[in-house]
Image (cartoon, rainbow, N blue to C red; front, side, top):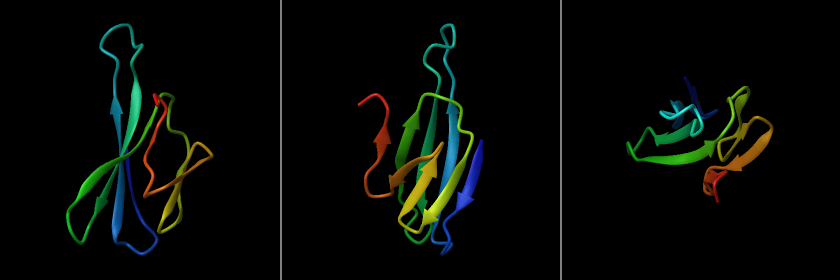
Length: 79
């Protein structure tokens, strides 16, 4: 869906659509954080609704639909 570099250019956040196969009831958006120096990737967020506004607030925090998420504490709406 989208890919955004961190302010310092060391990390990339890529947002994927994970689409419901049965009546569109299990649709989610997944944000995958990649460290560009090591190549390490991790899921940073899983949200159930359309991702309208994603931005880096700093090198250590992002905002998704006005929800602030520190990159060291992944967010999953199912938990």
